[in-house]
Length: 273
Image 1 (cartoon, rainbow, N blue to C red):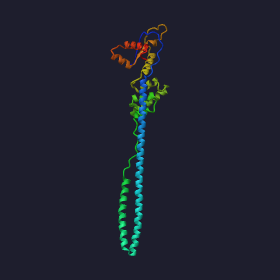
Image 2 (image 1 turned 90 degrees about the vertical axis):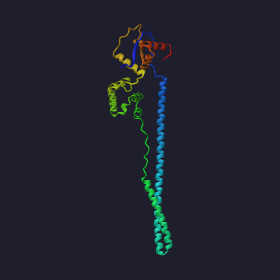
Image 3 (image 1 turned 180 degrees about the horizontal axis):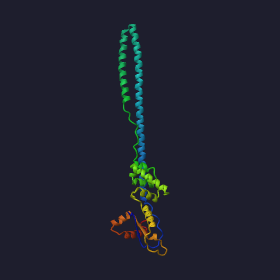
Image 4 (image 1 turned 120 degrees about the vertical axis):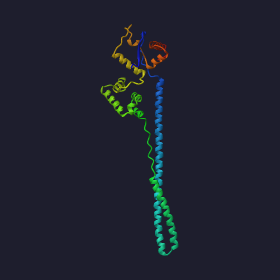
């Protein structure tokens, strides 16, 4: 499917127009989106760190409380042992009143020990909350973050080649094949080779990419063109309409040729770049 039309017009000789750059508002929007993405990632990392610190602090408190209970149990056991010895001595001495008091203290300590043992068991058996893990990033964004801007943009337009393990293996194989053929990465030729290998349809190419593809198609199969006049280059008679411009011409009820003529006139008047 052709994504860009080439219309031949009879134009006066003029200097070759430089390739149109990306509109400033698009560049600003991309920067804004990147800044928002970076801010979101930082916020998620800060929240994750705060959750980890809270979890660590709670774990330390739980461990401290358990250790205090264990220490109290040791203390009560020592007290019971001392009271038992005192109780034996009182009985041997015939001091039955003191033996009775010691017996009551021993009973109280036994009850206290039982409570402490129950508390320790409950604390040891209480489920521990696992350390919070940072939520995984979107797999597509995670994969794209490790690529060059153009490759990342391609991946975002074809997320199935990240989410599907089989397709991901095919994409990597297509990359290796293109590199083995000596095709520089991140070039138009590179992405065309990738898409041809993977049998996918190009999505949302930029006007510059459309223009480059059109030039290569024209070089591969030259179309008939009027003879040059006065040394005028053939390319000066070619006006390229992007997909958006063709759609606009259709919405306005204009023929592509008429839209192209208006485009040239507006450029000459300096109203568009």
